[in-house]
Amino acid sequence: MSTGERSGETAISVRDLRQAYGDFEAVRGISFEVAPGELFALLGTNGAGKTTTIETLEGFRRPTGGQVRVFGVDPYGQPAELRERVDAVLQHSGHFPELTVAETVDLARDLNSDPMELDEVLELVGLTDKAGVPVRQLSGGQKRRLDLGTALLSRPEVLFLDEPTTGMDPEARRATWEIIAATVRAGTAVLLTTHYLEEAERLADRLAIMHRGEVRAAGTLHEVVADRGDRIAFLLPDGVRSDDLPELPGSASEVELNGDRAWAVYTVRGADTELRAHRAVEALTDWSKARGIGLARLEMRPASLEDVFLGIADGAHDLVAD
Ligand SMILES: Nc1ncnc2c1ncn2[C@@H]1O[C@H](COP(=O)(O)OP(=O)(O)OP(=O)(O)O)[C@@H](O)[C@H]1O
Image 1: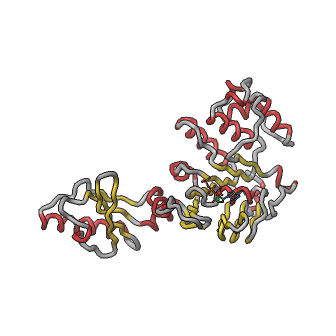
Image 2 (image 1 turned 180 degrees about the vertical axis):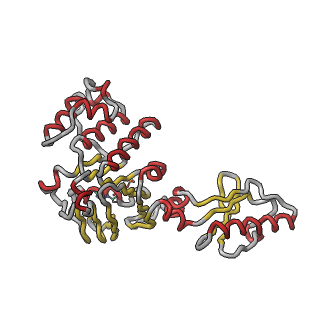
């Protein structure tokens, strides 16, 4: 159990954070907290402000507005009282390419007062057989595992993970998820950014989706997808236009193009979503029978994290200057 868990304090606190680069405001008033033994995932479109937020929490940047705290301490400038309690896997690691894996781990161990043993670190991240290999000869995924090993060897109470599994094959990614989950179970507060939605689904206790510097959705996975509602979809029958689709109480309809197929999509939101979605399917079936048309590929399912993300990202790739 970590010190933080014992005292019940908040590990990471972000309140109305604003961060600007010159005239451009990259982070526009975001707030969240992470407790010891909790993993919070920060998701978002490219350029949403995730790395800027993590860099601010790591003490590389002073907020232009709002406040960030790590165990109640302002992290700007990486004060000594936080150095032994906090570690990170950044997007770009700073290892020396000519040093071997073992030398790299030992170098990181030298900077800590009570680090894990070398063998323990190598085994933890599956690099035992690469101990004598220079870092420059590692694959991208192996370098990420080395990054994780050098971050974990100090047994940090707060861990920042900025896209930690990028470049890993599916097996290495799953192994890394196990390591991260075990670290959280041991009491570490983890702030994770990732573009792999499955990673957040597997690991996150709570999450936030950012877009253009703002949090657009936040909560547990269940809360975030429940907000989006249930989805009913079927292939738009030949000869049926979007205007011909029946109106169903409590649901919104639209036509989605996927490749060369057009889909009729209904979204059912609010209280008793499951029951109302079921009634909507019955009404659609009656409507299609009355017209003698089929509802090919009819599906009804709760929204996924991907649906929520894509709903937020819609238009995110327009070349619009902020
Ligand atoms: N040093 C900098 N100077 C000026 N603008 C910057 C700087 N760093 C980031 N930005 C801009 O701030 C915005 C947020 O960038 P940031 O790297 O925080 O986003 P991100 O959510 O981590 O993106 P990605 O998912 O693509 O890694 C982007 O528009 C980016 O171009």
